[in-house]
Length: 249
Image (cartoon, rainbow, N blue to C red; front, side):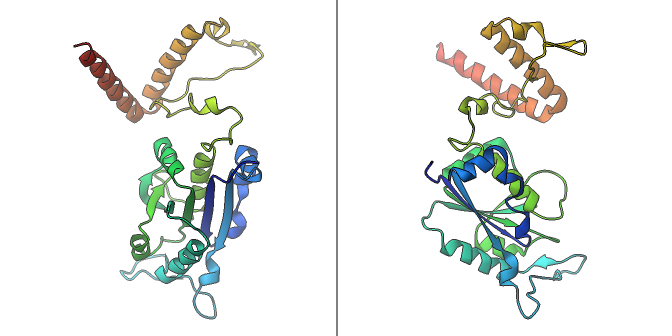
């Protein structure tokens, strides 16, 4: 068994959604191996009054409901009370947060305790976000009915980076986004499937040629599908070349 590397607590109105897909595949096995732990905090426990009210209308008017700051605050305080140590991070899943990417996921490995707050309706009162200095994170430029699916995406991304989660740790090195490039296509047997063949170069066993082919193909795919990433990649490459040239003098 592994020593627990990451403690996760998720605050949600729908605890029945968890662990969901996080209990399957490598993240599920990592949970069983105690590489990480997951505790769900039911936000309804902290609702106000007879009907356990958790939300109210926006002060500024308009449609929808906002999760109340005192309700969220009590849930966070409860989650915090059973977590020792200062190396922790509180996250709020929000469409106005910073976009999740591989670098952000890697940065989270410095924390051994993470609390994830799942928003609902029109979001949560900004004051509680500010009070707890939450890191607001978005998984994309689209709107979901709540933060739960986003939380699962975030946790899947982070947990698979924990040592011991993946069977082959080298898998992480060549994945998409590692060098601001999308991954090259992958193939397996049969070599000839319905008249479509695996590229011959991948069958040569010449690792240098294969690596060169994969890098060139990655560049082409990234340029076509993610021009924003390709621009970053080109700029980084230019800086690296310039640095190497300066070292010659």
